[in-house]
Amino acid sequence: MTNNNIAIVTGGSRGIGKAIATQLLKDGYQVYICSQNESELKKTTEELSKLGNIEYFVLDLTDRKAITKFISSWNKPIKALVNNAGIYLTERLDEDKDVWDKVLDVNLNGLYFLTKGLAKHIEDNGRIVNISSQLGKEGRASAGAYSASKFAVIGLTKCWAKELGDKGITVNAVCPGWVKTEMLLHDFEKMAKEQNKTWDEFEKEIAKPLELGRMTEPSEVADLVAFLVSDKAKAISGRDYLINTIWNRE
Image (cartoon, rainbow, N blue to C red; front, side, top):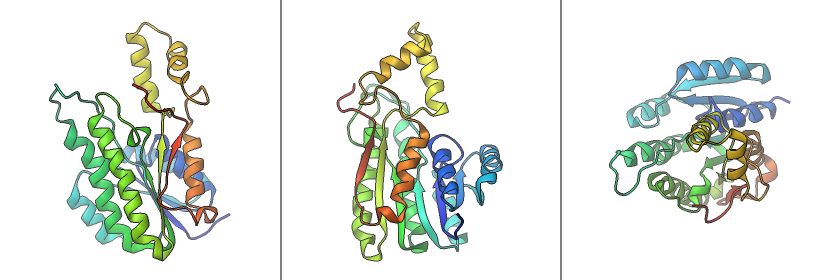
């Protein structure tokens, strides 16, 4: 199936964003992916081009002038905007790593100003999906900036759903828990080694409290996003969805 619907996926060169781009291509969308890393974007675009029409643009979401310049150059109607780009950095209250601005500039400010600028291009009955997090629903020690940014993303989701509903535009948030991205697996391998555990032992420990007893695959997050941008979800807006996660994990 092919159509003329355009989808933009931020942070689309790897991990969850790449999985979302993959699924949307399979569903017939023309997909544009962006990130700061041009080499990763080129690699992903070449890899996924066999599935359909995919292009990329380099965009630093921490650079408001770059966002403004990109918006002024964009002149195509958008069916779906998926705000996936994000970073996770930790900082305790008694530390000073200058994490707050770095995290909020990507996870919140970049998302806000990009969506605000592109809103005029989103078609009536279009879709916005914001990737929040389990930590947009609950806190975690040392993740103050990240949790605050992801809570705020859910807040924006609910505000925008009310603002855009009269145009048939739906706005929803997806809140993944542990997802087996390359970046997460790399971090977990380091943590397992630090605790003198094998990767299998460490993964089982992490996954044991989860409802399904396993971590989520990126493609499973993409499946939910694909549903939310489809016509089957036209009556769903202002909602936030947890994926395979638990409450009150320390």
